[in-house]
Length: 235
Image 1 (tube, one colour):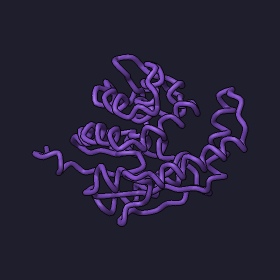
Image 2 (cartoon, one colour):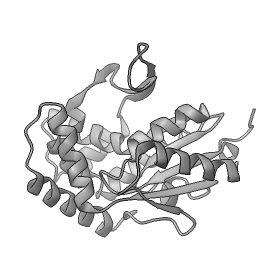
Image 3 (cartoon, helix red, strand yellow):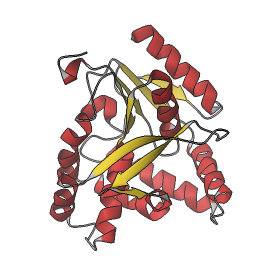
Image 4 (cartoon, helix red, strand yellow):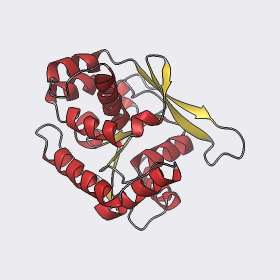
């Protein structure tokens, strides 16, 4: 359909941890019938694999080398009738599905550390751009609109208060039967925000031409509707 990857339409959805990017991107990708990229999962996979293989989170060269050879695939898997979502994202690492271990606080904090490493970011840059395939791509991350796809036709930046994001994370964990401490989660979110926004390479910030949506008081459906309305005007 398109002759050049650069001509494939891209919607970027950036924002801090807990702003709702992952859920929104999945829903929007399903509605548009486009591919999706969960770039945060790439950094979590690198961190998870590094920890699993005994690599030091201070050894940037070793972690960057692991990132270069990362064997990952994202699949939208059809769910049984009656499920809350018609499709769910399945992440395959080295041909095997990766489950809840990718979403632990330990992996998330480790991902924030490795994501601040310039060599790791460089190693994953082209990998992320390779997800740009017809008919289109919805990309979720922290620097999708500023660094990875600066020419994206639509850029959205989702935000929410740190307190609201901590409450969402707390509810997610409790609903899964995992004990959690709200104050500790809020502290972790504030630390991660500072690390992500202050890093020397591709810091977390809205692109100059991004549409900013505060999701603090919005439902998932309301945010999806807003994003699709923006897409309708641009694509």
